[in-house]
Length: 186
Image (cartoon, rainbow, N blue to C red; front, side, top):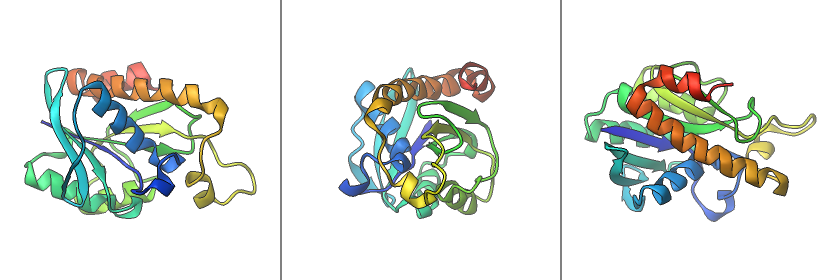
């Protein structure tokens, strides 16, 4: 069983922001594989289903980004999942909008959601899909940038990026993170 968690912030005011890139990929997986992510549990929303023959739990933490680890830790404990069964999808400002970078481990790189997960799991060893949201323009505050919305010209690129992120999730589950990195990085 795989735990697939997309990071974001709950509430209408955050719905279309850059920081909610992980939530949007979970929404795409939910639609594509007909998995309702509506069950309120573990300080988040979860949905159980099957993707390409793999049992999955889709997770959207409702703890706000900075405390995402609370929800993810609770889900993993309840389902007795190891970190090798975890895939976390989140926004990355160092990548162009819609671009992906897969990693099997690493530091938080300044991302507070990942920082929280590392703190709660006690390890940096878990699969990640970084979803590009573009670098903040010079003079912008980082918080204002990640809580801002994409412009109209990025919409199509983001749609394609979400589809690629869904493909990357399936690749990680079926072929492993190394294969995913070869196919989707760069």
